[in-house]
Length: 245
Image (cartoon, rainbow, N blue to C red; front, side, top):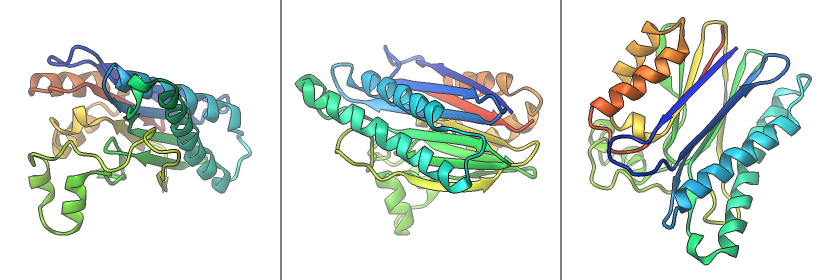
């Protein structure tokens, strides 16, 4: 396995409220977490930082190479709940931070499987057998409209309310994370990112970049961020890649 990540404040924002961590376990299994924070008084930065810290600690303390697939499912889901509780409790102690929150995408790649848990509109993609697929569904107002058939996926990209998310970490004492597990074979690549990437880089272009840089995922994350910035990216941009090499 190989893991790479990059984050950029972007050309417009004065601070970066995204956060990212990734790494390898001793047996070569990989993990990554990407978060996009929100909230005044620097609350977004605090929320996303708490989330990546808590999730990293929980994964590292709980992972075992002999774990069953079901135990790995519990591990990634509970890591998000652990982060949610920590953010919620922090906001409860400091009134200026009340209402802060963050999205989260957690990837855990082990034993030819990719475990994915997420909350919010940060996404995960899986490239396998030459095709790229989005493997998370946004928790957002426009995604709800798409699900209802009221707008198309293309219309959602430019909808005036596209930034409204319907589920985040830290606002309530419990959060429901969506979970899925996928086959993850040699050559497959998983990418987690904030909406600072997906709002400015279309899926087809993302797929072509992933094909171009199959041998160098470090170059991939840098080029994708560079394109998003040049394409008018007005948000923070964060990407993590797990490559089964």
